[in-house]
Image (cartoon, rainbow, N blue to C red; front, side, top):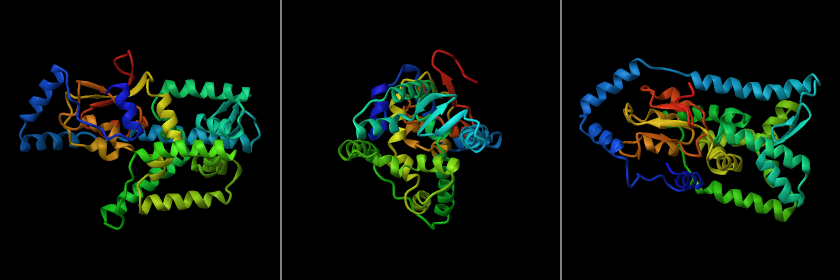
Amino acid sequence: MSLLTSLKVMLGAAPERPKTTTPEAAAMHEAKRLIKGPERAREIKAAHAEYKSNKWRNIRWATLIAVNLVFVLSYRFDVQLVEGALTASRVVGFHMADLNSALQVMLAYKVILLNLVIGTGTVLLMWWLFGGRTFCSWVCPYHLLAEIAEKLHLVLAARRMVVDYPLHRGTRTVLYVVFALLAAVSGYTVFESISPTGIVSRALIYGPGLAMIWVVGLLAYEVVFIRRMWCRYICPIGLTYGLVGAVSPVRVKYNLENCLHEGDCRKVCLVPHVLDCTKKTYAEDVEVAIGADCTRCGLCIDACPTGSLRYDVKGLNKLL
């Protein structure tokens, strides 16, 4: 997938089947087309019988909890190694600031602070290195809550007790501009006052306040009406980090050769549109790097019974 196509999809454009494919990919697509239904069903059943993994989910959850626990313990025991919250902090005296929060502050107060520039520069470099929306799935505390809420939604949906009413993905891009304009015009960081990322982070560190009522209500709404509404359709933080990490050396890579196209990866994906290349005839090459909107969560890697998805470092054959 080209960088331009990846960014268009992240901003809300619908993924499309590629108009051209490499000769190697075309040959594989044709060979897979000749496999009949019963034979394909047997292959899928055999692959699933031998494979089950939650490796990357467990590593990711442990990392997310550990990162947030560092903030909590540092404050509780007053060791001052890490001060502040995820939106803005000092790590061993060195300033770090969330990119979207810093943008909101600069737009609202019409000032650029040196500490803010230093802090955002450090964070920008770090999330460029990890790529995509890594912050969302590996660090954001609301993401973990939303992931659990999503599992509850899927259980209720399977019993036909709730129905998902998805929004257009371009809604997030529109709201990104709206939140920026609100900050610039009002002189107030409007988004920060409603961001569940900051609210949950501060609640963990300093104790919950009335703002947690909003977070609980938001999670309840996601369970009943719109699956992962905040992360998929509203939050500008993910869009900011997606733009920063669009050309990261670390990515998830798809290999067409052994893929059975059974769709398990898309079923578990937090942003399933990034995995359209795993559909039959959608891969433009034998190997395809997953786009900028990917959260690098690893759920697709855990779900794939043939190892067709993996973490990859650009320029190296394999990370693991």
